[in-house]
Length: 402
Image 1: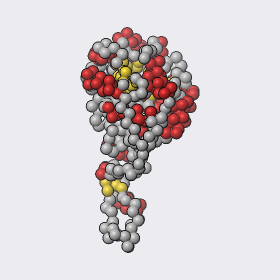
Image 2: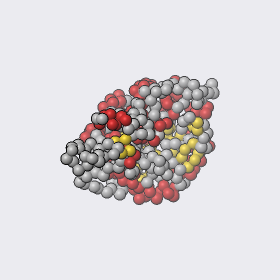
Image 3: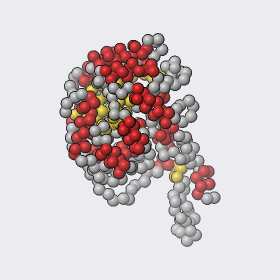
Image 4: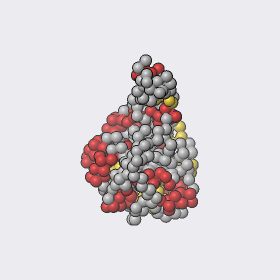
């Protein structure tokens, strides 16, 4: 039996049955010829690097930072990926958040998922008003009103009210494009560039409220969860994250719909999250940044992608230094998602990536890399760019001073 046959027979590529085998070449004279290595479950494979490289500990960011992408509150009721109630669940208290913020030199956290209506008002009261300039809250669409005949007008009015209540911007989850359907939770998927949302985009532009938009996921989530998928383990642990098949659009279709929408609303500012939702293809992101001068990006939960292409990433930071925002996707007590769990270690990894030229280090505080089995290198940004990424660019989008 050759190696390919062995891997196939042990189930590599089947969900829940990934297996790797040592590549040792055994001969009749080898000590282990009669006892060859046994197949090893991938979940038990935790290699220790033998590489001797520089390790720099960066406990605080060089300059005060604004984390443009965090999740402090979530909806108390949702179905099939669609939020259906204004009431919120709070994931972290101000005291526990501020303790980490002060240690790590975090000036402000932007809570993108502030909700709408009474839930938004309460969130702003708990955080923004109680701790001025330490927290900023974004509102979200009221999808529960989607079936009303005058939804476009109602949604635009809701944005106006949210602005009056203190919301700093609008957050669009991937609900739009991947979850919201014609009957809210059933029927055909609603497209990102559906004209019913045009008044909402226009209102944000008129009120100078940036739109933080997340419309897609890593490309691997749109391909089969098989032995060729570099995020096999992640998708195996979270099968509901896969958008391959069924009636889901492709990643390319989502990006095209987003681009059509952005093109229709040149006076509205769009913060396209997760490195423009295509961190695996910086050329594509660059083309869109060149095309849309009302577009910026953040780096939340994507240093794992940027750090494995450090030369291309450094060039990207150099060219678009005025349009890249610091973000982490940090979620308090989000222990199931180590690439975004709010804690000191998460921020220290981001600081190390941005401020040092260290090589081959973990991109998340986890025993096993959660997004893919690779490590990253730092991009060692100069102070002039660090200032912009850490706070200057976000302050401009939020209309605040630092």
